[in-house]
Structures are given as structure tokens and as C-alpha cells.
Image (cartoon, rainbow, N blue to C red; front, side):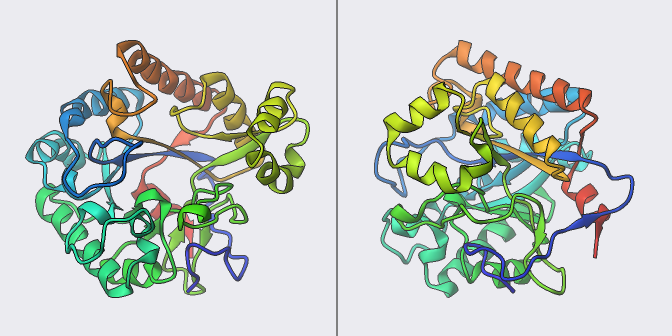
Length: 331
């Protein structure tokens, strides 16, 4: 089985049943609030935004979209989160997954450092203990066994696939293609595939990468050029302004809607079978992330999703759930 933090050793693209068509999923990094500009802490976090999960769930239900809530330890311990989400989970209007933030997830044996915030850098037995603790807490408190996983900070590694198999997890979605976190001790995903692929020959663990594309006149050379531009912010800004090269992640956080629509069209035209959208749950209330500072920003976030959902519908790209993906994938 391949390590998640390295490009796959074999080309194992996932195929889906005839008639499945192109689909999209909406993954929500459902996590505690903390100051992204400060060093990580086990104690300095909050859960004020949890009350807003109900509004977002109602919004998604009205759009016919089944959000996938990737829950970390503080959320898994929140009675309010369970009260809000469990009815939607029971009704099949939402799904649940695992997101491991090592620094707030017991057992606490490691020093809290940026390097240790990537689970790939923990001893395998500690990564296993944390992940299995979280998986069990989610099932106990929300009444549903999670089938999908994302490493916090996208920090999956060589030991992660085997641990996921032990946990009964069928899908990993830790890969953020075209992003490189190596400078801080994280993975380098710049060479990973964008399409869904199998991590093993037995087809037991499916990877659903987050969707990021390049746009611009030089986008066909984006994999080679963007790392150079990234190291020179002024050059990157000029390239974007001139329409030469821009990296577009399918998220409302930091990506204007017009760029997101361009990125969505590129991903669709590439023939990607599944587009993977994401954002962080603290953005559902003002003041917890850099992307939603006030009520106007929050209104803009909901409008972003409305326009994306309408555009996807116009392009005949339907929403999908984890269960639908697993039913349609060809083994």
C-alpha cells in the first residue's frame, strides 16, 4: 500500500459505474476555533461557531447537497454539535468523517510543535492511538461510523493507510494536490494526481484529492512554473494579474467566486470524475478565520456556495455522498 504523502507508485485511477457521471462532494473541516497566526496550543481554542452548523446544514439540505463533516476531537466532544448534526446524519442528509488534529487529540505524549501538527511526523503507534480514539468517539457520540478521513493540515503519511484500514475507513481525502507543505515539516503534494485513485492494488483504500487547478495562458506548464512563482510573491502577483498563471483551489476561503467558477469549469473540462470542494467550519461565524471577519463576509460565503451549486447544476455535475461514491466505484 502506498504512503499518502508520496505520489502513488502505480497508476491506479478509480473508475465509476456507467451513468454515475461527473459529481462533486462538499467536505467541511469541522474543527475548533483557534488563532491561525499564533503557535498551536492544546488549550487555546473555542467552539462558539458550533451553533451555526444547523444553519449551514439547513442551507445544504435546501440545495440537495449532502455535506461531509470531517470532525476533530473538540467537535467530537461537543454535545451541541451532536444535537445539531445527528438528525441530519440519521436522515441521510449529512455524512460524517474523521479529521485528526494531533495537538488537541489524546493521548498527549508528544510536544506541541509545528512539526508534530502533521500526524505523519508522530511515531506510528501514537498516530494510531490518536486516530482510533477519535474514530471511536465520533461513532459513540454521533451514532454513525465514519468512512472517510482527512489528516489535519493535510498531514497524512506512510503509516496512515494501514491505520485507516484498521479503523474501517474506506476513503482518504488528505491529499491537497498542487500544494507543498514540506518547508514546515508537512507533505509535498505537488506531484500527486487530481483524479481519484487507489492507494493499494487490492482497491481497499480510495484517495479523493482536494481539487485545485491552474488557470491562465501558462497553465499547461503550471506544475513546473508555479513553485518558482510561489517563491517570488511579486512575480506570482504579476503572473496572476496578466492572466498567465494562477492556482485555484475549490474553496470559498480566499478564492473569489469568479475565480472559483473558472476553476470549476477547468476541472469539469479536464474530465475529473469527482470535484472535491472544502472549507473550515469556523468560517460559519464571523471573526474566527481570516476569510469571514463580519456579517458581510458571511453573507458572501453563502452566496459563493449558491452560485457554485447553480453553476454545477447548469454543467450537469450532480452532488454525491460518500455512500454514493462507494456504491459507484468499480473494484
